[in-house]
Length: 275
Image 1 (spheres, rainbow, N blue to C red):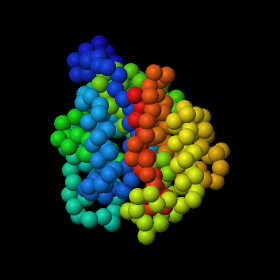
Image 2: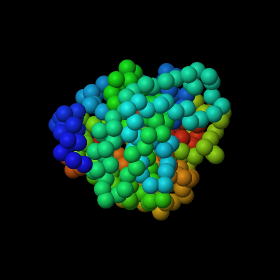
Image 3: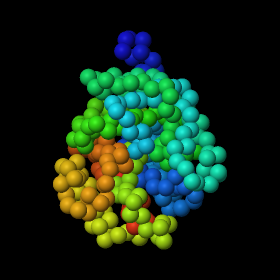
Image 4: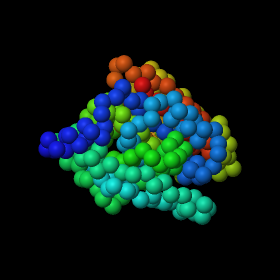
């Protein structure tokens, strides 16, 4: 990164008060076009924080070998799902990108090699929640991928390198679900708020207590915390965005929960605000 790059970034993203960090339980893609208590929670979260200069989103749906950041000026809206109504496929979220922020993010993560990507865009883990928070699509959005070859502790430590972005008005969002087991969904209660299998109720109680107590080690070592967590996190893709969020918490930050409900037996919409 040369002096001109630094000057450009400084011009675009001047110093601000430290921004909060959010983990959003995004749930079904249908939340993008439905009106329910969860999308109301996303809007409320946005209303309670300063309008960001830009957004960096770590989505469960960009799981790659190595780390990438989107670096195009106008990211496409990716409809990375099937079997849903045409109205969902018609949704576009034409937020600009930020090649400058992508470049700075890659620099902050050194010596990790980060690819500046020009082909991905915004997947539904990003746009399905951000569209409710900032419906005018007037805030630049970039995504950072999750390296599936690395353990949770690696991602927790990597997140710490992004902390300076919070002081440049950058809102960092992790988007996934703490409890996410599609094989065990109770389809009769797919839209029933509060519906959870016994193991999901146990996993929610444990993870909520660990979050509120600041016991992040148990959250990072989730595979060692018993059968309920093993059912809750059968694969790490939707869980690791939470780990990035927690890695950005410092000693002065408060932590609170919202949208804290189970649905469909095996999914949680629990979301986290830090700061």
